[in-house]
Figure 1 (cartoon, one colour):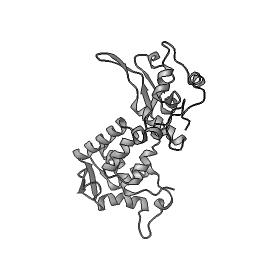
Figure 2 (tube, rainbow, N blue to C red):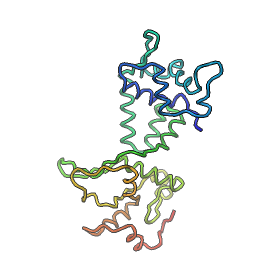
Figure 3 (cartoon, rainbow, N blue to C red):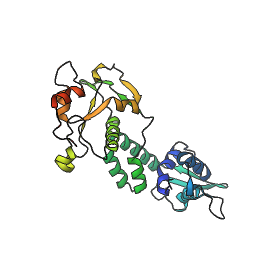
Figure 4 (cartoon, rainbow, N blue to C red):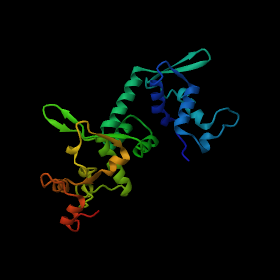
Length: 255
């Protein structure tokens, strides 16, 4: 059972305020966070002599510890019998920048960003283990600029790398020849790999394709640049992973 820390409430609390610009009270915030985190075990226990659980008390501590106000993200005002939380322009900008960083950066950059912003190890660890189930991946759309180019989803690459490393004890290597860039090049080669789409991108129509992340992951594999070039070596013909492995024989760099 997970015991949550106060710091883990920061981002979902700010997002809740962003979605309720007129303001929310602490009771509403507690109920919202309970719906998200579903506290159990010690967090769900009632504190002796109080009406609060350990979880709801941690949420209340966001006010008593000035966790959200000291960075200028929120304003807390006493109105009638309830105090009201409202998000500030600085808080809105913070959430926007955080969401952009999650969409655009590789996983290691996300972790570094969270560290630089002062997030706790618990949040950083949770983000690294993020469950992307239900995410929809957009692939293969055509942009008409000075030339026609295909969009590859950066998010798909990021998740494919995370998924592969989780299944292979944290290691990342070519699925054809086994070449491991980290082992050969050290930190310079960390997380260096290419994503091969087993369904040719040029076969997709101009609008591209949307599919759940679980489906999208089954349509790609991770390969080194050399093997990737060999797959596409024969014009108008996409060689399969089995074809390349057969030509290669025993991998030279088995992990």
